[in-house]
Amino acid sequence: MGGKIFVWLLTTVLLTTPSLGQAQSKIPRVGILFMGGRDQPHLESFKQGLREHGYNESKNIILEYRYAEGKYDRLLELANGFVRAKVDIIVTTSSYSAKVARKATKTIPIVITSGNPVQQGLAESFAKPGGNVTGLSVLLSDLSGKRVELLKEAFPNINRVAALWSSLSSEAVLGLKETQDAAQALALKLHPLNVQTRDDIEKAFAELPKINANALLVVLSPQVTLHSKTIVDLALRHHLPGMYPTRQFADEGGLMAYGPLIGDLYRRAATYVDKILKGARPADLPVEQPTKFELVINLKTAKQIGLTIPANVLARADRVIR
Image 1 (cartoon, rainbow, N blue to C red):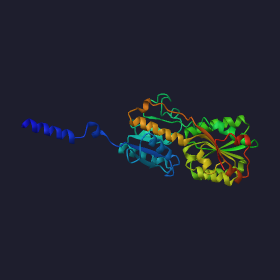
Image 2: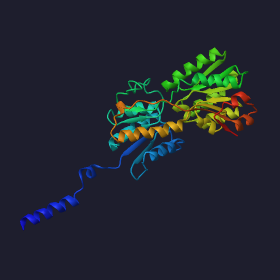
Image 3: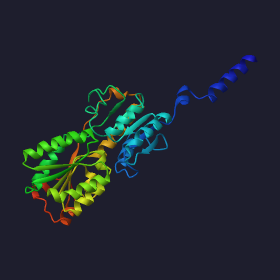
Image 4: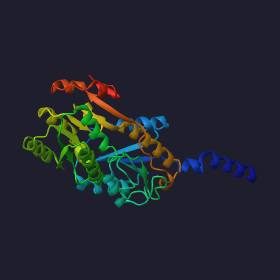
């Protein structure tokens, strides 16, 4: 009789006690650290990438958002908040925020979707990052020369180009150097204008009549992306043909943009999240570089400022906004 009771008790315990895997299972939490505000044009691409890997927000993955609102001194506080919350992964959207996040933690995996993590000292190499940071490089500086060439090809008569850049971004420093080299090769006079804030941008445009700039080029950095709409609107007001670094600027009214598909990079960042959640170490996950680039031309803007895009340049556009 006692043996039967023991068997019954043991069976009851086994049936009512969760397995080890069940006891340890939990919904993963991913913290996303944004430099800007809540208007994030590429966030949906990241969520789409997660869905492609079987993750649905609030069902089997929790996404926690933190916005610095352009205030760089808030980033460390926000990153430390993720550490205290013990998130499983931190996703960052700029090299600057990735550096801050790594200052907050050397153990929580960090997935980056911008800049060049090797140049930034965030990874030992593209093939083997070696630390807790991996992700996708945007090749900010490597495309700057190509943008100068496209701008000159579209408007052969330009000779003085204003270049908006930010010294707060080390990638933008490299991008400016490449822009200067390309401008010199094409006999263009380049006028770099260092901007950090919206006020800086407005002051820079106020300077344009003094330097007789007849074209604008924007070197990609978080500082200019935060104020993309302001830059585009001011360029329109000054009737300046502009070359911009990402589609976002063209969608907002910029004349031309050339660069990687940022939305595609965000979507691919979800692959890193998936691999890390399944046990991969960021130290062993190679940093990817962009594989898709696009030239976007906004014909509505061209008409608005009274310019004609040459047929040979228009034919090369991957996307035309009419």
